[in-house]
Length: 117
Image (cartoon, rainbow, N blue to C red; front, side, top):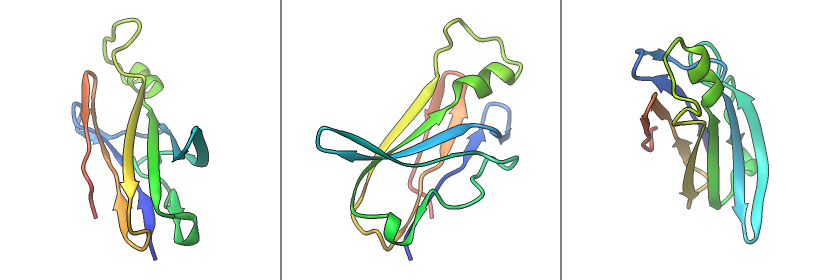
């Protein structure tokens, strides 16, 4: 059974990023369809997969990580406006029976991602 999962690691502070709003959307011709919304838990993960089973279909998706409020509350000195607010990762799902793990490695002025397992 396929599923979409994520987590956020604050690599600058060396800890999970808790309380971050994550939106998942499916990209369609002419727009986008919201398919899931949740917040990260104290471990920087979601409590359940964002999508799983029949809800995960072939297509293009975006994960929208609303990191601005998290960064503002983290005790860092930030410019106004801060460099990062919403990090968007767009990716394709070719085989919905696979596990797609799309983590965010976050710092104040940058981020990275990869396809995990």
